[in-house]
Amino acid sequence: MNTGIPIQYFLILATIMFFTGVYGFLTRRNLITILMSVELILNSVNINFLAFNRYLYPNKLEGMFFSLFVIAVAAAEVAVAIAIIINIYRRFTTINVEDVNEMKF
Amino acid sequence: MSLGTFLVMRHELLLIASALLVLMAEIFWNPDKKRYISLFSVILFGVITIVGFLPSPIGSLFGGMYETSGTRLLMKNILNIGALLVFIQSVTWLKKEENSEKISEYFILLISTLAGMNFMISAGHFLMFYIGIELATIPIAALAAFDRYKNKSAEAGIKLILSSALSSGILLYGLSLIYGTTGTFYFNEVAALFGNNNLQILGFIFFFAGMAFKISIVPFHLWTADVYEGSPVNITSYLSVISKGAAVFILIIILFTVFPVIIATWQKTIYVTAILTMTIGNLFAIRQQNLKRFLAFSSISQAGYILLGFIGGNQLGMASVIYYILVYIFSNLGAFGVVIAISNATGKENMDDYNGLYHTNPKLSLIMTLALFSLAGIPPVAGFFGKFFLFTAAAQKGYYLLVLIAVLNTIISLYYYLLVVKAMFINKGETPIEKFRSDFPTRFALGICVAGIVVTGFASIIFEVIKNLSFGV
Image (cartoon, one colour):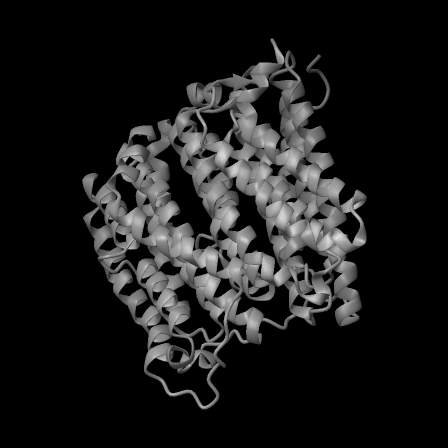
């Protein structure tokens, strides 16, 4: 069953996605894009869980279940974050992080 | 398996039931009775706190995903006491016109975060731990953005939710590497399969970085000051005491039970981060004018001292960490209680506004002084004993240089704590805060804090109890 794509490919993809997400989180200026970067990070984690589960520990489904919970919790997190972003748009009339800076140092 | 076995998770069940009760009260009570909701919630939560101290069965549930032990029950009870104080302190603030619609939301969200923290502390499996940590942080972000019509509150909310999302992403990546090398999420199985494999150590570092965000350890502290300043004061006190305490508790449990094999690695990590956290927290606290920001940096440096209890991996270390959190709850909530009382009465939060406070409000000034002395660690009060035990635990394992740096940092911290005391007692204010009388809940909470600061310092039995329940690596 382990024919086809070797596990390394999945892990390399996940690693690239993770660091792309971190880079995007730190450099993007739009709050929605920052949220998308967080989603990239969480999905890279899911790929890791699934790849490890399928290739290394195929008898138990713990990795699969964990990624299901990660997806559900990420949805809750995004819902709250979007609600706060809407509130920010009402207060500041922008969602650019450089304009949302009333507090510094 | 009978229903009685579920009594093992009594703390969590009670919290969830009380959140539902408050929700029912919001739905079914007449609008003119709504103002009693805060009284109802506080009494309900007081009952839960007392019930938590009753002897409870100990064991594990759900195939070991959920575990309790004497230590974990003690941690939950300490958090309950702190949360009860926060609840009482927020009653006055919730009476304001702008909050009249949101009283029950406030209590439901706070109770659900507390339930999340309890699940997190009782975790025996990383899935339970992750769900608990998210249940504890997502509602807090909603609470930080509670003042809907203030720009700063919205900003604090988005900063909290984004940094906590990033930190849980990093933590999960670490967990995925640990899963890849061990094939299990159960704490005891992971501990048995852990070796000095490089990939496992990398996973651990990611995990530690994620937790460091939650405890605001330098270099992951940058969100702290902004979130603390922007949130409503009651949420700030909750964040700085209860959230931080819960994260410290679960981190020490996980380090001591899941990662004892790589103790040499995490001792090095903690050595560096403890020095950075203490020093940077203290240096930034000196230049703050807003009291909430000031207490934020002070709480960062307190996290640095707490790390000293981790480093030895000994029983005394764990006991001193739990004891210090208990003392820290009373001292920090005492300081925040005064800030809350003044902020409710006048809306002032800057250090200059406190000039000459002693001449108009002597009692509040004395409580603030006592709380700050306890935070700084001046001998007669509890904070001194807390710091003393932390330093002893680190010195017992031979970390003399680290203890020396910590003592030097205590001296620096004394300088800025005394700046506030000087403003209250010596500085002449042109427009000092008017004399005012706080209402009963505020005075009651401050009274408990003062009693706690004094009693936890002198009653040695408290430390004995904690020490008997603690364990080393």
